Image (tube, rainbow, N blue to C red; front, side, top):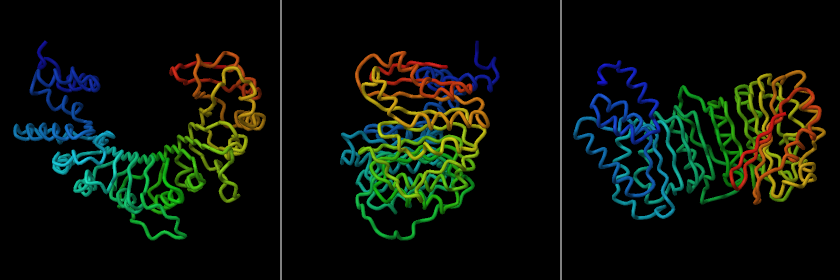
Length: 407
């Protein structure tokens, strides 16, 4: 059947369903010039630069398409600059025309960076061009090293349409602990508000400052928040500050909190730093960590205080080692009686369709959890089960096995 016998809209719709089948997309692009725009939209949507040869090859493709009057730079929407460790900070990137590439891909909406050093020779000259992506909506920074925190804040401040921000292990080489910080750059005015924030791994005393900076911008309207806390209480204090923000609490729909206590002691002891979940009026699902020493976790007294009537799922992430046979391990994880009472009380008034999920993450070797372990969770929450809540157990271990249970 010839392509002209089908409506163009139908052909494009078929091609859209092939977005992850690169071989078929390439075949379609060679079959007809009319299919080039639809296939290129998917073929060049995401560009990844991990080694110098990637940059050289992309430059060649851009030059060739520009000569033929159909520049593929127009189709690049996601750019990933993720140097392999072999080339991280290496002089081998010199002469790869990274700056020239960045000048041409002006339509980037998603940018992923890391691991890299923001002040390295690799990024020198290209940094200012990265700041020129005015259409950028999603930014991932992972293992990116800055000289000063203000260097990172300045980088974040220039994107007026930013709606998704992931900050993972972004470090500053000059780590100081001043009593007061200087004024930080302000976010550019824009119509979009930050709707998704994933946060983990800033140096001590900087986490709270980043949160204060975001809060002062008046552009927070988070719908999804994923916050991993470890090593120091400043990360937890930043989380407390965010959840007290009414613009966050009123719109937040998805909340993930993981608190890792290496010495088994809660990091926040002050009454001013108490985690408050009582303002979450729109939350739909929550994921919370349960692990050794979590009898003192900050969220336990707050579970029953969540006012949202849209809450459908609470997921508890359980960490352990040889958990297949040790009943006492589970029984000692948390104050099950208090948790059961909080859940059962809310199910009768606000959460009639609640599902409680236990995701068991196990570092040990073996074949996975046994049915006895699966049944134990129902026994630990008898009132919650009796009120009609569904209890599910998921397991992920060395073999990525998945054991499911629903009561």
